Length: 102
Image 1 (cartoon, one colour):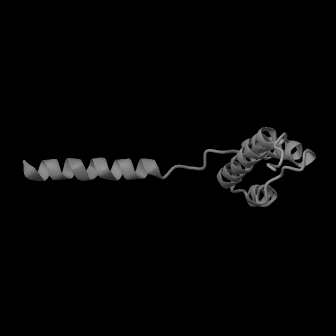
Image 2: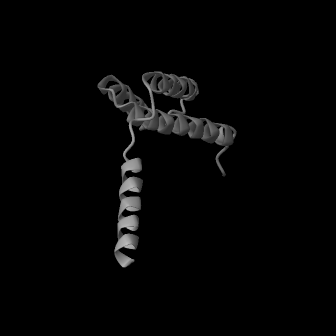
Image 3: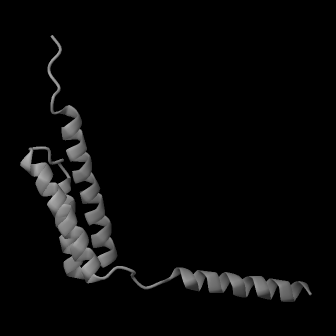
């Protein structure tokens, strides 16, 4: 009886581990769309001189990952760059009327 339980647990574990190894979920279109959206948001931040230091590098890395066919990484990097650009715009909006304290 104990052997059957051990075999059942081992097979369940093996099946769950096999399910964890899946194919990439993102496509070239997903990567392209994410990169274009991040670039558009970053261009808005650039237009008000609020671009963050690393955002451009993230976009370059995303484009390189897309060229290499690593679409999951490209989408991840593009989303990170897009979020940085959104935060840069939010920072600009919150601080554009700040005056020095005298």
